[in-house]
Length: 509
Image (tube, rainbow, N blue to C red; front, side):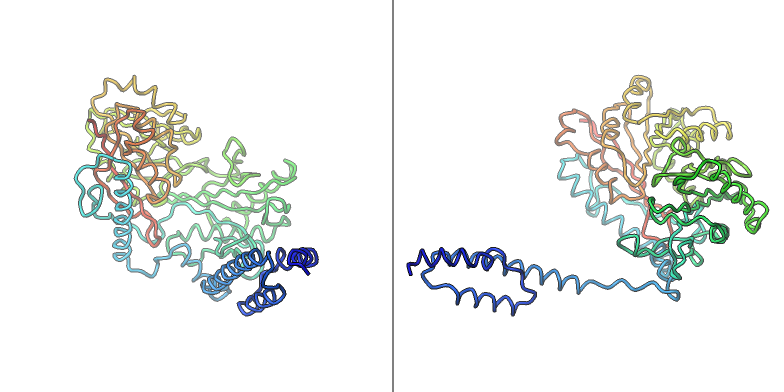
């Protein structure tokens, strides 16, 4: 038989031998397969090269698969959550440093900030930022970390979820631990968390008793028909307590939601939950992961409409969706740090970008000419205005709009200001690039204080864009901001998180 005929016959009768070979599950099987294929073909087969190429590809795929299998086997197996270890595992998740002495925690966090600033220096050099003299490999001076005055039960806000517990009860109120899909998450009560107030745990436990006596199921998924989702508990240094229960309305009629509201009110006012002594109770029927008060209004069930928090000798109104620092005593340290490194004077105009409920504007008001707070959330602006009235502060104003839209128009109004200092305190997601561009284009701003709870996240990109003289920054012809001073503040004892206050100054040619 001619080679071509033999080759053609082999291709026709054995196409799967070459093109549909299944990947063997062991190296021995691979070697056997190679021997079989070589024995089946004569030496002068013109398709031998194609077969060998295919086999080499299969070999590479097999080795890659085996390598991945070995890597998966080498990964540590997540320990099973049991009734005996659930509280320990929750503490390790929520407060991973709870067994570390506090002074050592501070040392660890300060070292972490040094590492982040070293990375920042490299990135700023890459974008040709005009850095001042650096020290010890850092882009600016790093001050000693400032400790939290309170390290136990310091949280003034906690959100407890509702999911299945270790015992299989889907109406367990607490925090989730585990990885992967929701089926791998376990809800554990916050009984032994040391950063949480006992009053918060007590309210969460009472809510768990309430929903376990309810006929309505838990909302494990949005499409499963359940309603119970979470309860958020807030308290102020005055001792006042507020709870906000969130449900998924599903297909419930308004009358049914009002009936649930009435049952909740009775439980916490006259029923078994009365011992919690709530000062304020709300209910929100939310169809989404998060809802603004415009999307899903808060239904006030009992008590006051807001509670009060004290900080830096001022009083702040706290509504269900108000933002305020989690650790009030450490917040005083944070705000004192801002006041210290901003070096403001009676001639200074302060721009408080992402002002929230106006804390920084109001605390800095006695030391500056005036303050302008900018915030996109209307509810926060309303709280800020009320807080100004509450504290009889008149040299502040608040604007509800996006910062990138407001700042350009402020340039004209601030043109006669001798000293303009901007303070930004965004969420973990950092500032939108448009806000960074607007700040750089606002030539009245010469100093910027950036407060970040995650400086190695999106905030890092903000830092780089502030200092960059390459790409769009050079085309915009705007003078950059570079870091001059950094101060870590420990707002979250027993966790790995730390707040970083950074002073940036504009560099003019």
